[in-house]
Amino acid sequence: MNSRTLALRCRELADNKKAENIVILDVKKLSSITDYFVIATGTSEPHVRAIVDEIRDKLDEECRLRPRATDGTLQTAWVVLDYFDVIIHIMRPDVRDHYDLEGLWGDAPRVRVRQRKATAAEL
Image 1 (cartoon, rainbow, N blue to C red):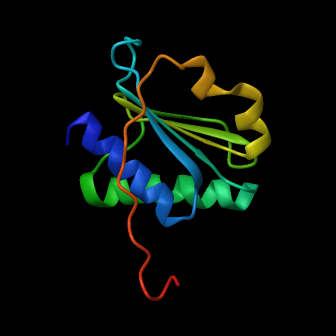
Image 2 (cartoon, rainbow, N blue to C red; image 1 turned 120 degrees about the horizontal axis):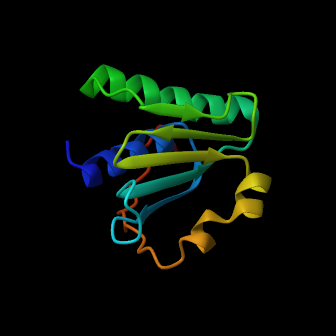
């Protein structure tokens, strides 16, 4: 799986758990350590935990991918999953606003994703 496909899959998995304001930044021309950041908001510690677990479990199950490193604990407001070419940041809203990764990496293009249509069950 290439890094763009992995970033898009991580976005989809975060969306499965109702993560908010999911953004993918293409940082490969700006960083030597990774190609993409996936940044998402979880509204509470249990929500952050659910998003992290979904990404970690599904990537392991589907692709046998495990994060090289995980930073932050599930009791903190910010968890980072490092999959080498894709780094995922799951944060509570106050932490995301404070650290403003999108602003710090403002030169990085955002990857545009078509919004999926809601199913009848979701309406």
